[in-house]
Length: 494
Image (cartoon, rainbow, N blue to C red; front, side, top):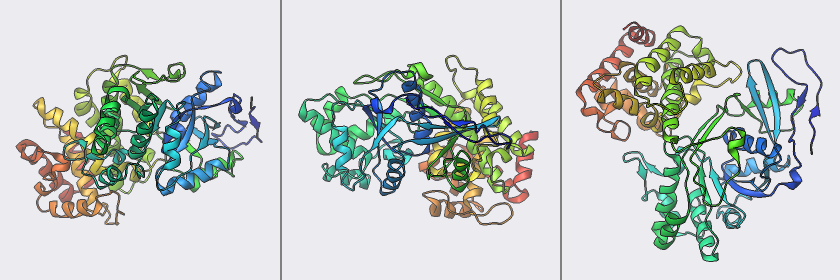
């Protein structure tokens, strides 16, 4: 069993540098049961930490992780982690003191190749009983207009035409499931750990939908025997840059080029539907429930929606850090009022959860100065996030006969952000995969707001809702005529 490595103490405030916690189990006794695709910061601060805690209890050592990736950039992560025996540095940024640990739940990282042959071979092995993913929302090939799997996506068409040489994660999963079926091996569970509504349903649609394009019989077998649990995941883990690497160096870990920093809070809520068993994650804080969607709605509406409500006005006002945005009286009051008046009333009850307390906890997490999260990160990919995190709350308010002017203002602020300049006239660098399209629409909307909400892939039929359209036009006109501060103040005082 490994023991903590002693370090020199320091007088610097907020640092607990007495030791870096090492894995409290013999990693030589681990054997893989999981292949995880997408070894970004979130996975290494979330799922890998839960498993590390479980292994430290002396349990389920046959559920270690094999890391994997399908993009050329994943090869660089493989090189970095292989050079340190697949250990990850995770630094928890508690305002009362930073704490570092080495997480040892991963035993190897599969070679990354264009045809994904090593990945397919690994997933075909009988001892692999879960394939988990963090491949971002875009990796599920969802048509934004319908919210459903898009079999016409060029990547899906290409994988269906060459199923033995897939380029996507789901193409590799389908190929491995095909091999298992041919060999008489039961399927694995496909476990999405991505932050999108109904992530298990989305993974199921992508897997079965892709399989049906090339092998309908395989698609039917997957539908009958594989499982795709829905789950809600939560932990803030900012991107790694020079600041995070310097932080690792203060823990005498300067040799790690890919440390992870994260907030102390973490949460994982899962459906207990696993085709071939699962590790005892309930023993280390994971909640298993049939009501994942209730937890998911709570988190998406309050936390992820809160990100957008906070980030766009803050970024337009030139505020770079999320905790600094929480220190701005107008921005913080805007977030608080919108959440209280327009989000909490349309969030269904969640078992064992006090929504007001959850909202206060979220605000405290946003205000954590140690996270150094950026408003730019929270503003990224609004074209994908607004339809998931903001528009549903707008619709629910309209359905109950209320025009949610704060949420409408938040969406108008997103439009103003996509114009490409902040309140001082400084340029905003492209920050969305559809940035050029959004910028053109935002500039046209300055004269005719209907041109923005007419984007059906984002707003659907809301442009035809007269009260919503009028409120949006009023909000956007106010932003342009009187400024960000005035628009926020007008709403807060209403």
